[in-house]
Length: 468
Ligand SMILES: Cc1ncc(COP(=O)(O)O)c(C=O)c1O
Image (cartoon, rainbow, N blue to C red; front, side):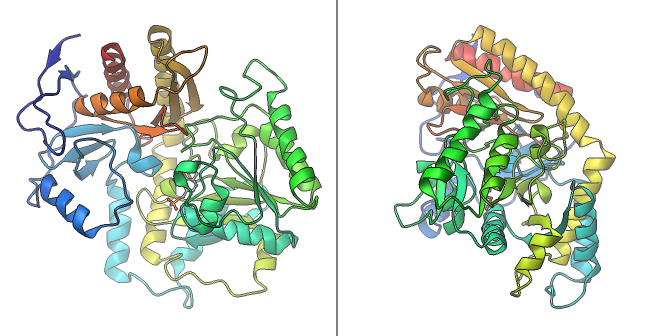
């Protein structure tokens, strides 16, 4: 593999870059866009300010931290104007593309008229947006609540499940991520994201239906049913036999893009409903067409939940989250007032409407399926070539490859995964990381990705794996 030293223009923060060898990068696909000159402080200065004045708990991805100052469609630019293919999409948040002109225009128009007033007054945006979002939902899922994040959405969903059923206990899944606030952390089952403080009140975690690492693999036609039996078992042993509900991501994202075996949710929902509970689908990563075949991730499992939570891609970067539920459940919550200062903000709702329209008009769900399948097939070819890849999985443009030191023992290849992310970044490709051991590379690019971008992504990965 040919190697070159990094160009003098690259950042040198922390580690000495000059001593680091880089792999020769393939050309990024042509892109007719000129980033603006960046007039702000250097990355070194921003890092210094961050270290002095910011929450020390926030983490950076790369040894030489990357500063991103501009974005357009599927690309982002650093302060030197260097372009990167954003295959992480702001952690699964840029659904329709960075700075999409329609989203910008919707925000601009509304910001010039009225930025904020709250739901104590009427405003058309929140009402019309709720109507449009409800139209995307199956069954009786017709009542929308707007919040600011996925954590808030899950917190509200938990409250709804408990208030509606009168029950307390909740079943969540191991390897899940549902947020960083108190209740989100309680639902989450990943030591990385949990503080050593009291949490998880009434939350019980069932076995993760992980066909790669779990007891039943993809070759077992009863895997879904078998994993779901643990939900029933948990309800029988860890609760009074009555539960408020069950929550699951439709594909576990932070956990490393774990796709459940067919029929898992169908059987799990049956056990939960038999115990008096309602089912909550966390669509924060899987919603809005990203899985390609369906608009909502739960539809890939043939189920309809009673409560759906959304965030991230719903706003393409706007601080927007939502909970959608049935009229019956909503009526219970109406026993008390519900208020959220920014939830349903006119400017954010305008962006939410624009996101729905762009997904539709630009046929981004179909694109997620087509390009996702192209990448998936390419990743399978890489797996045949590079023994470090233990598993390829995902749907549409929510994909993952799990790295293992040894395919037989499945020992997580954590250091190799981190190293690969670094060398892909050096070649102009930004990727995500997931899994309990940071052993899974995650792909969740904006859904406007092109075929040439997919080829670039696969080429970069091939070179990076060849050099490990
Ligand atoms: C599946 C899922 N649910 C909930 C959340 C929490 O969302 P937020 O960070 O907007 O609070 C996340 C965030 O990564 C997520 O991936």
